[in-house]
Amino acid sequence: MQEPRRARQLGIEIGVLPTGAHNAITDVSGVRVGHTTIVAGDSIRTGVTAVVPEQLFTWAALPAGLSVGNGYGKIVGSTQVAELGEIETPVLLTATLSTFRVADALVTYLLGLPGREDAQSVNPVVAETNDGFLSDIRARPVTEEHVLAALHGATGGLPGEGCVGAGTGTGALGFKAGIGTSSRVTTTSRGAATVGVLVQSNFSGVLRVCGVPVSRERMGVPVAPVTPGAAPGAAAEHPGNSCVIVVATDARLDARQLGRLARRAIFAMGRVGSDFTSGSGDYALAFATAEPVLPVLPVLPESDVDPLFTAVLEATEEALLNSLFMATTTVGFNGHVRYAVPHDRLLALLGERGVAGTG
Image 1 (cartoon, rainbow, N blue to C red):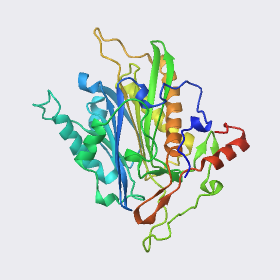
Image 2: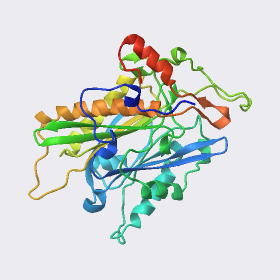
Image 3: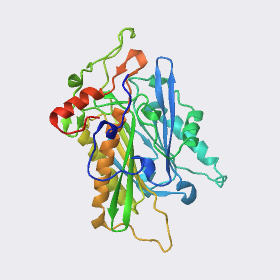
């Protein structure tokens, strides 16, 4: 089995802006990530991923914007985010039919925090993609303990990528995918700003790397792989659907501007080959961690948001590629298989086109 490697470890560099220290969403100060990976027997390949901004526990809410590329999916709490332009909880990712158990567990976690003894309302934010090709999604194996483990285990540094947490059973663009992350540092009229992105990839299309189409046929990957011992009548491969993108920035933006930033994150899916099918739930949620000060500083001028747009486009594209390149071939429910992108064949193809290093 090949060793998981990030895009830059393969000699593939996206865009022109520099990355943060970890090239991850955790490069935005105070943002932590935790995963709970659930693998059981031959049929369970799922999990939970938590994006936890520490600032929430000091300021109670952060400005946020939501963009819906295609609404065939679920984000618990999204209407209140759209209405008030803020998040008041960590952002959790999981599998479609486990969304509601995760949301309930997140509420339990929040009500138990010091100072919330009298709270009578909380708006949990939980998003999902469908990992039912590799995992028995009807089993709904995610428990409160799994959710609390992801929240309590959230740390800074480089988060796990590929087949971890909410990405354990997902696939994208014909290959095994999962969780990916990246960041960019840019300059605005207020000084340096960091944009970090984390993705849960599970959507269809033909992979494009640096503009080069990377089909499964070209990579030598079977089109409808089912292992020899699969259950009678096992289904051919599901193409995958949906993508959730979480964007964090330390730039001082309001909810409307964050919605614009989130929209650019969805645009970046097209750079890697998404076909944006009608059954794909494509969502991006962006939040800002800039500290509120008195007197309150104005938000970034509209004339100065373009560097942040460039940053989120580049970081999202690279995060999506990392979600693929860090994933490993996985056998799951009913003997279904999703194959990882073969690095050697990918680099050979890119070398022929003269668009990447040799890894």
